[in-house]
Image: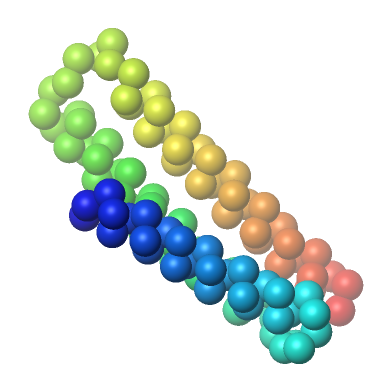
Length: 98
């Protein structure tokens, strides 16, 4: 996927998420937080698959172990996991205070 397509997809997902979030916070729509975060979870899943595929091809091609791109990809996956943990934590808090 070209860089332009990835950036346009990212902006589109963030725009949809922002619109849904604003509707929820202004109480125009009384949706569950799970529905609010669906665009972000889809984006995180696609980004995670993209990074894992690139990590597998990186290892399969036998790149040098001193290359800095693999630790960077591992850091991206760690960031995705932290973000997903935060989103699930918000859902748990929402269910606890209903």
